[in-house]
Length: 160
Image 1: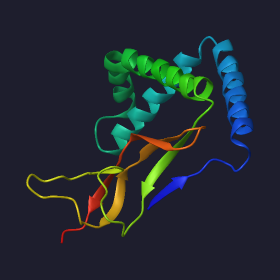
Image 2: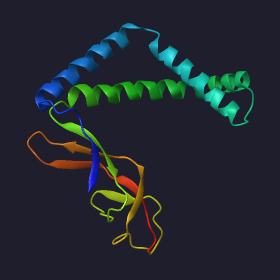
Image 3: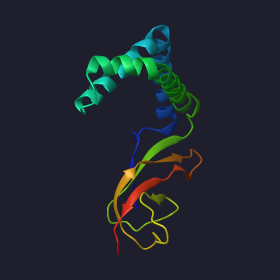
């Protein structure tokens, strides 16, 4: 029913420990670079400025100045939060595997594993067929067995 992007097939404990070690090492390398947050934020600002310019909004230099003026602090906070989340997922959750969930075309809607991305009032999603996934889901595969849906996939459903 679901498609998972499965982790490699080595023994789960070995894979989890290698993953944690790799992330911890990369985190230590990153944290040894004092100006890394500044470099990442500058790169994000330049990329956003270029994106806005390519969409017809201002010139890259003006966009860069405006983003730096109004959003640099928020981008820095976003980078810090992403690093913390990366650390928590990679180092603190080593006994379970996290898997991305994609619902394939043609499956019947199942409210336990998915949400209707374009839910309309009064229209029941049950007995409707999935066209595609719009937002990926997240599942935790327990070491002791079983799975827990952390985030349901959002899907587009075919009208009957």
